[in-house]
Picture 1 (cartoon, rainbow, N blue to C red):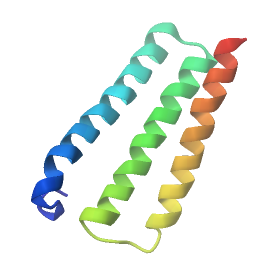
Picture 2 (cartoon, rainbow, N blue to C red; picture 1 turned 90 degrees about the vertical axis):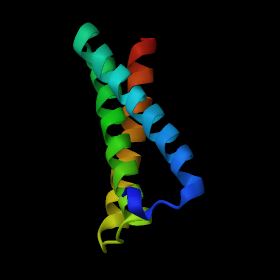
Picture 3 (cartoon, rainbow, N blue to C red; picture 1 turned 180 degrees about the vertical axis):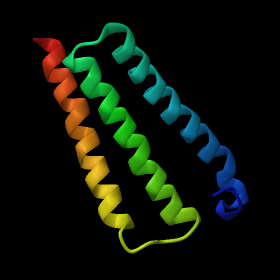
Length: 92
């Protein structure tokens, strides 16, 4: 992806990727350390969010594929559902 990213966007893309991966790592660490349905759903949602943004980045900076839009939306909405469900379960 790196060659397809315009010069002024390289810094923000690196910062966003680092924040996204830190969020996913934190969710995975919590799920492995704490366990429970809420933590597992949060980790699953975070992983799907990374997948969604990865496909989106590939579409934007590398090469569009015909199934890309469907993959982005499907993984994004499933990620949001997992994160929202984890909050609901945590509050119980």
